[in-house]
Image (cartoon, rainbow, N blue to C red; front, side):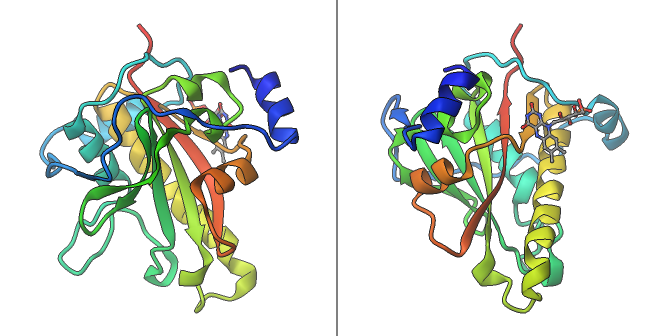
Length: 214
Ligand SMILES: Cc1cc2nc3c(=O)[nH]c(=O)nc-3n(C[C@H](O)[C@H](O)[C@H](O)COP(=O)(O)O)c2cc1C
């Protein structure tokens, strides 16, 4: 769906998901991430870039596992994560929009929990490529976990943590031949409604990931 149509539907509050493709499992246990693979860090940084042309091809589960672990996984025995967060509030939830449904990433269990049994990819942004790429991530701040941070600073701290997740994803993508782009041009109300978010949860950014169009 093109951006103009999405803008019009969004303005009317009628930007809806599509039916799911395939069966959505209520839970997806991700395989352990391969922590030895990928390019050396400096080569991955050298290749980091935004891309906006994606193939209509799903990611294999091991790649999805690595992507989510690199982005926001647990990397230490004490529950520490691959991204920083102010006073370790760990306030960012990562939602994963797949053709088969929308999932919430559980970093501790390294698994995905079904949130919506529909294909919500097109709701995650105005640009047309979001509808067809392998997946769209949505970064959501839970303000309920930031009670120790002064209210006026919570939003900017949350965006900072989401930016760190995004860069982890960029580097994973660069390292594994994937295309990605972080996006702020999104309909936050439509996304929040589709994901059934509550008043403490704030949609921050979305990020598309997939195989590049050849
Ligand atoms: C906060 C933020 C919001 C962005 N929003 C969008 C967006 O909505 N759509 C898009 O196509 N690119 C978006 N971008 C990507 C930028 O356009 C891109 O990073 C910039 O053009 C530089 O290109 P590069 O990432 O390849 O270096 C965003 C980047 C940032 C940091």
